[in-house]
Amino acid sequence: MKSPSSIVSEGGAINGLLPVDTVVDLIKAGASLSLAGRKAALDRLPAGNWIAGTSPYFMTAQGGRIVDDDVLFVTDLGAIGTVTFATYEAHELERISGEAPDNGLALAIIPGGSACHTEFAQNAANYPMAFMRPTVGWISGHDLEKEGHTPWVYDGQVAKAFPDRVAVAQVTLPDGESPVIEIVNIFAPDGGDVIHFEETGFTPEWCTVNGTRQRFCDYVLARGREGCDLPLVGNYGGAHVNASLKTIDTETGTVELFAPVFPGVDYAFAAPVADYAGDFRQALAEHPTAGTVWSCNCILNFMFGKLEGVAIGGAAGPVTFGEIAYQLLNQTMVVLRKE
Amino acid sequence: MSLPAQGSPVWGRLANGGLSRLQTSHLGTQMLMKRLELSPAPASAKATEIYNYFVKWERSLANEVAQLNRL
Image (cartoon, rainbow over all chains, first blue to last red; front, side):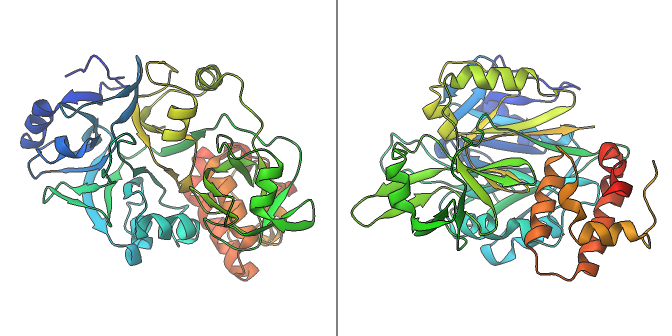
């Protein structure tokens, strides 16, 4: 079964947009699925072997799309491995990797803005099995043009939506296969100031810039970064891990981020990007594609990059309000491959 | 190159700062390096964690394993 807007990975697994009625048939046939779409579409699904999260935004082979209630994005997890499903509350999140299979991964969907989102963002890297049994996934969102819409995740086993639980598919890979978790980040440090933070959090009040302590809001304004289009880039052993700016309240001096910053990490503002789609296209053209089974990309890339209707290559996937590759990321594409 | 045995001093050296000199583009390894750098755990616990990590992902870390004895 193929969707015109899907990218079919090696082995012909479904990873693309399908009509809701077709998804209902797949669920009734017992397929193990990861789904994404609008709440009105997800609310029509019967109980079965699936998890889901809300987002109307997707990257497809033809370009970025904003979908209506008639389609869902479908990833056939059964083609990747053997799948079991679970949900977790905020105080249980270290069980996501703790209960993941030895040879496999956890695919997690977390409701945006929930206590689970905050807990995972601040602590995921310190969960005992975080790097032995990797977690990939995404933060659910909503249509930014619709008043009152909020993020949800779904436990397909009971066909129920939750605003405050993590829906997880534990995927065991066949013997001889291993998961490969990679990121495509078009942002790099601008090579100027090095920024440090004193505390873990989404709203840092103070920072140290090249050794001089100052209010973070003042620094952001002094750098002219109030447009929030360029993230902070953290150096994690050479990996570029973004924390994106969400809002700036100049009256209270509050800067809110989409991901927490951490003490002990070197941060810098990202260098400007001249050609958002072109940079993604180039990065993805150089990225290994063998065994790609799943991906997601960030709503900030979709919006700031004006990616609706613009093809960038790579695997299709949901456009998300935070990405997960071991820990929470921002403004980044996450790719899951098997090798 | 095969992985050093668990009793090898390599793991202790890595736990005491050697890991920061590892050249890698493997995302999980990069993030683990940062986690361990910031961790208050004793070096012996870090050495065990690094050893178990390399045992688990040895097949994907050929370039990294080749560096272990010189870190």
